[in-house]
Length: 487
Image (cartoon, rainbow, N blue to C red; front, side, top):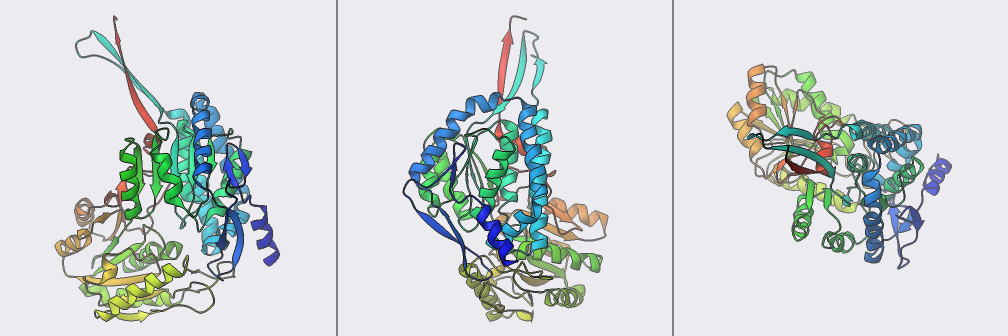
């Protein structure tokens, strides 16, 4: 396995992709990519600076006119070929992701398939960009409605889904005819670099996509957003960074898509199928080691069934195998870095200090990496810090409620509004609660909501715009109206 790991890392280009060419950073800098399961260095990659960023923007601006005139079918075929290449290389790409991010190999393979599906979905949407034609109400003119590419885009992706968050943005941008500058997360640049090579092999023209790994994200992105040639920014990450990017985008009145933080409530009513609710909680809490914006952050369980729900969930959580994601049978890998580990422990300590009880877990795992044991907390008070802070780790805090009104009020008592989960067998309650919850998505009797064919996004401080589904391409298109007289 060690030889294969080294070979997979070795095959990835370690430079900057600018204008279709792999090159070193102009300043010559590099930075280390770490394996979070061991703390060891996997490799070093080029560290982009502002001069490199402007070279990437120059390439995107130069390529935009010809790229947006490229036939929609041709753009779709690039995505289709890239989809096929991703699936052909699923095993190697999954191993690469596990090495730089930590998630277990089976889950990494699942992400590659999920990521590839965005390319397949938007390959089919490229030829379905539609406008319209109508007669003015007074009959004296005609209205022609066109849909055109927004223009060069800045795409900023997080470390927790290093491949899928790239394809979720790149797919609709290519389908719409936009050029792109992609800045991947510092912790996980290798997946993005591998993706750039695949797109080039799939026939993406030079200059359409540039990739800029960097240790100075603000210094690289802000000048581009203020330049005037970038016309859209799409960001997935924390709400504080999203606010800053919105401020920077305001000067040039940029189109923005923001998929920001979450604080997902998971509501279990006493009429729920308890087996399905526990299974849903495992999916919603433990997907990606709990390091997901969609992760169940607050588990609200009706008082009468709370003890039994906690017992069953604790059994499931306590039985999970913790370890390096490449090892057989491992179900929970390490957190991304030491800072993340310290944050999770601090949130658990705060909750316990306020009266919460640790049923299982509650501390770091063994080994040199950033491991944290799957944890279930009961008797969690509403004022505990983890009820208002995105945990981003394998910790399930259970809070009880007595009635539907209380559950809705507690669930909505947050600035975030990305996703919520509801488990009930009462059809009327299902509709009432789903309509009352202040989130952009609801998982009703299911613990996973993400799907390339569905619109993903939140309300309140969880973001702006939607990614995926039929509306996903709209974020990369402008609407132009042509008024036709004399007819």
